[in-house]
Amino acid sequence: MSSPAAFPRPSARRAVRALIPMGAVTAIFFAIPAALIVMLDLDLEGWFVVVALVACGALILEEEIISPPRRGRRMLHRAQEFCARAEAGAGTARADAARIPTDDAHGAQVLKRLRWCERRQREIGEVLASVGRMRWIDWHDPALREVATELGDDVPGLSAINDAVHNAATLLTLAPGWEDAWENECGPLREDLGTFRELCRETGDDGPAAPTTDSELGWARVRGARLTALRAQLASGTLAPGAALDELDAMAAEIRARADALARRALVAEAPPGGGAGLAHYREYISGWKLPVDDDRFEYSGTWQDEGAGASGVSPGGASGGQAGEPAEVAYDPAATIRLHDHSPGIRAAGIRWRGLATASQYSSPIERILDAYDGSRGSGKKK
Image 1 (spheres, rainbow, N blue to C red):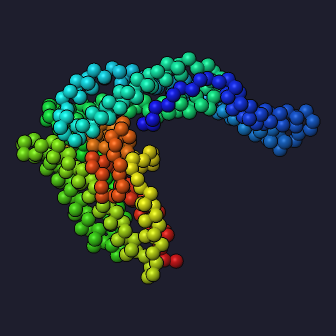
Image 2 (cartoon, helix red, strand yellow):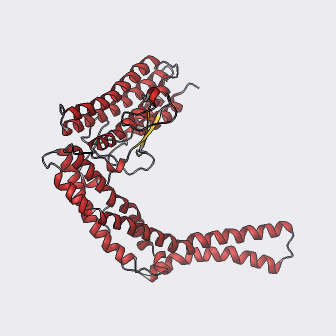
Image 3 (cartoon, rainbow, N blue to C red):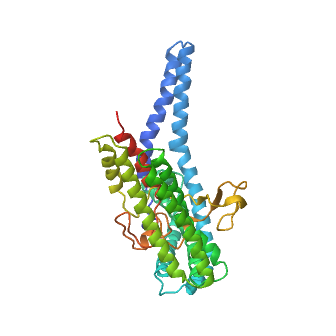
């Protein structure tokens, strides 16, 4: 979510200044064909040019002049729906929040995000009231359109935080339904383990890093089994929920660190004698990875492939996959996790500052970024 923005005063002058350039360009695309028709005896090729110019003018007219108010009103309706949903669940969220242990670091972090989202909801409600009074020409005001766009980015998190609060209250107190909350919490790590296995397969490929890759695949299987074992310990009462979440923190950092180390070793092993361009490219890419970031290319998809479902086709969380013996696709809700990731609702209110692959308490970040960096770096270090 972005920081709150004050609603600017509508200005017809700003809107007209923004419309004039596009209006002039559109007029040119219509004026030239009209002049050609009047002044020239057009052949077939000339008529083709006329039709093409008119079509371009029509597209500009639709996209830049007619559509903005329509898109704005659609965005406004969507924002109002999200706000209404958040308000409808506010009472339940407050009741759930009252059940969260305040002495647990994970619970405290969720409560901090909830308070921020509640303040943001009040501010957005005021902005929406002003947006609702916008005239047709106001949607062409760049300042107002910027605020409207920010609203479109902000409002989904207002209702999503309620699910995270409910999961925190349920899991941290082991209330009925805690098993579902736990499996949802494991989702980002299981998705990262799937990406880790993909990285292992790519770094293997019968290349020089293949023996290391095999051992890393074995480690990934052990980590996946550990997630299942943690659930059993929670059920038996031998492990407290806060301690289980702490272990997820450590595991997330370890997955990132091992993926990074594997990618670096593979690039060194694949490089020609005296060549280090691939590793240098990788280091430069990864050095810019600071959290939290707002990069839609790398966010948790909400699904992971359970390669250990076996013949039953049933995942550790109880979700069934495809045919027996095939990997089961399991869905979860990234926005509802207690632990943080780049796109958690209210993420910037949590005060997390992440520097380095193997750090960050309560934080997961898709290691798909490491896979992408490795793939992009392989071409830089290949033999010519």
